Amino acid sequence: MTSITAPKGTKDLYSPDIAKWQYLEEEIRTYFEHFFYREIRTPIFEHSELFQRGIGSETEVVQKEMYTFDDKGGRSITLRPENTAPVVRSVIEKNLIHETYPLRFYYIGPMFRYEKPQKGRFRQFHQFGIEAFGDLSPALDAEIVYAAFAFLRHLGLNKLELYLNSVGCKECRPPFLAKLQTEGEKNQDKLCDDCRRKLIKNPMRIFDCKEKSCRETASHFPVITDHLCEECAGHFEEVKNTLTLLGTEYTLNPRLVRGLDYYTKTAFEIVSAQLGAQDAVLGGGRYDDLSRQLGGSPFPGIGFAAGMERIILHLDDVPQRKKTKVFVAYQNAAILPDAIRLIKELWDNGITAIMDYTFRNLKKQFKRADRVEADLTIVLGEEELAAGTVTVKEMNSQQQHKIKRGELIEWIKKI
Ligand code: HAM
Image (cartoon, rainbow, N blue to C red; front, side):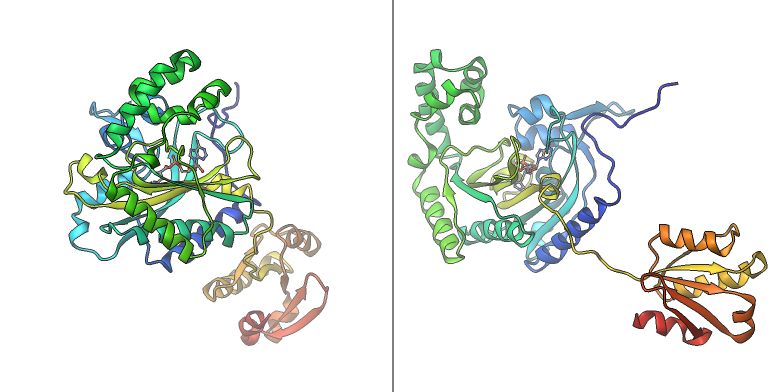
C-alpha cells in the first residue's frame, strides 16, 4: 500500500522550527496588545458569499484560489483565504461597533489559497493581522503602518521596503478607471492577453503584470494619485505627514495595487529584499466600504496581514524559553511508586519533568536523560529513600548533590 503524504502546499510544523513559531506568536501578542488590540478567533470556514462579496468576484483569489465546496446541507462553504472579511462579518453580526471602544482586533491563524506552491508560497499558510474599526482619521492609518513596520524591525528584519499608495474611493476611482481603460485600449497591441482581460474587469491590476512589454507600456499610464478627489488627497497628505512625525520612511508607489478589491484610500505593502519572488511580507490598507458591502451599517476599517512563513524565513536564532528539564531515575522497579510520587510533586510545582515507566538499569536511564536534554537527573534509590533524601546530578557539570527530600523543589527552583 502506498503511504499517504501531506497535500501539496502544506507543511507539518515541529521542533526545532516550532520554537520560531511559538516565539513569533508570543511577540505578536505582546507587541500588539500594547496598541490595545485584543485577540479574535473566527471560524476557519465561512459562507462562500462572504468572500465573493467582500474580496470581490473579479479578483484572482475569488476566481481561482478559493477552496470552495458544498457541505452536506448543500451550502457553499469556503476555507478562509484571508481574515479581514470574516472579522468585519463578526463585528456586524455581534453589533460590536456600537458596544466596544476601541474596536481593535488581532488574529493569528491558517488561511487557504489554491496557488502554485514555491518558496514562501503555500496553499495552507499562516497570517497574523490586525483590524481597527470606527475611526476615519488619517493618523490611525499612519499609526498602523508605523506599527507594522516597527514590529518587523523589532523582530530583526532589516532589508525592508515600505510602499505606500492611496487607491482613492468610490467617488474618484471610477472616473480614474475609465481613463485607465481608455489608455489601455489605445495600447492593446502592447499588452498581454491577461492584461487585455484585466482591462475590462479590473484595470488597475495591469500594474501588477510581470511581462516586460506590459510593464513598459503601463509605466506611461495615468496613476491614481494624480486623480484623487479632494477628500482622498487631503487624507493621503495627512497620512504622509504623520508617518514623518513617527519617523517612518516610506516609498510612494502610485502603481501599488492590492489583490483584494475592498481597499479605499491608504494601501501599503512591506517587501523584503531577503526573500525571492514572493517578497511581500505584509500588506494592508483602509476599507471604509466593506461593512456596507457585507450588509452592515457603514463603519470604517483599516488593518494589515503578514505572512508568518515569510517572517519565519528571516528568523535565525530565536531566544529559547529556557526551562530547567528534569529526568527522574530510580534504582529498581520496586521504587517506581515512590518515583511517580516524586515526579507528580515536580509537575504540581511547575517543573518540567519526565521519567521512564518501564524499568531499565540506571545507565540506560541516564542515556534517556541525555536524549531528552535534561539539565538535572534525580536519582531515587533504597538508600535515599531510607535517609529521606535524593541524589541530584547536574548533567552538564556532572556534579552530584545530596538534597533533603523536603528541600528539593526550592533547590530546583533556585537553579
Ligand atoms: P494579502 O496581501 O493577500 O492581504 O496577504 C497578506 C500577506 O499574506 C502577504 O503579504 C503574504 O506575506 C502572505 N501570503 C499571502 N498569500 C500567501 C501564500 N499563498 N503563502 C504564503 N504567504 C502568503 C490580506 O490577506 C488582507 N486581508 C490584509 C489586510 C488586513 N488588509 C486589511 N486588513
